[in-house]
Amino acid sequence: MKNIVIFGAPGSGKGTQSDLLVKKYGFKHISTGDVLRAEMKNGTELGRTAKGFIDNGQLIPDELMIDILAATYDSLMPAEGVIFDGFPRTIPQAEALKDMLAKRNAEVSVMLELDVPDEMLIERLVNRGKTSGRADDNEETIKKRLTVYNNQTAPLIDWYEKEGLRRAVKGYGSLEEINAELCKVIDSL
Ligand code: AMP
Image 1: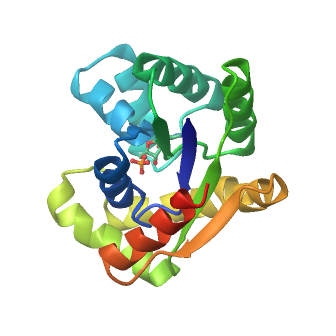
Image 2: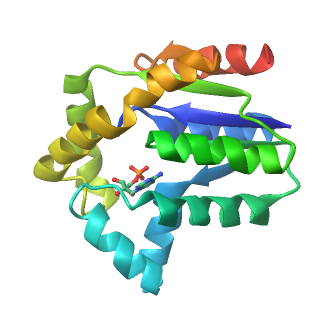
C-alpha cells in the first residue's frame, strides 16, 4: 500500500494534482482543509473552532489535527493507497504521521513536493478567490498563509529530505506535464 504525502505552499496545486492521481490510481484522498471546511459547513463544534484559525490564515493546533487525521485515515481503510494533502504542515505532525502509520504496519512511501515561485502562488490564490467562495482566499489572508507556510511548514522539506523520502517536481507549466512528472515518481516506487 502506498502512502503519499503531496506537499507544497498554498496554491501550489496539491488539490488539483491529487484529484488527477485519485482518478488514475484509485487512491483515497485525505485533504485536511476539505475535512475542516466540511465541519464548518455542518456547523459542528470542531468546525466552529477551526473557523477562527482558518479565517486568520493560521494553523489548527497539532493535537487536534493529528486526532482528525488518524480518524479520517482509519475510516478510509482498507485502501490501495492514500494521498495526504495539506498534512503534515508542521514537524510534530510529520512525526505523528510516521508514528500513526508505524502502528498500522505502514509508512510514508514518498513526499512529492510541488515547487512554485511565490509571485505565482499569490496570483493563483487571488484568482481562485474569485470563484472558490473561500473566506481565506483574499490577499491579506493569502499573505499570512504564505508566511505561516514559510515559517512552520517549509522546514518539512529538510525533514523529509533527511528521511530520504523527498522528491521535488516543478509545479508550474501544464497540469498534464506536472501530473506526468508525479506519475513517473509514483510508478517508480
Ligand atoms: P488548505 O485547504 O489545505 O489550504 O487548508 C486551509 C486551512 O485549513 C489552512 O490555512 C489551515 O488553517 C487549516 N489546515 C488544513 N490542514 C491543516 C493542518 N494539517 N494543520 C493545521 N491546519 C490545517
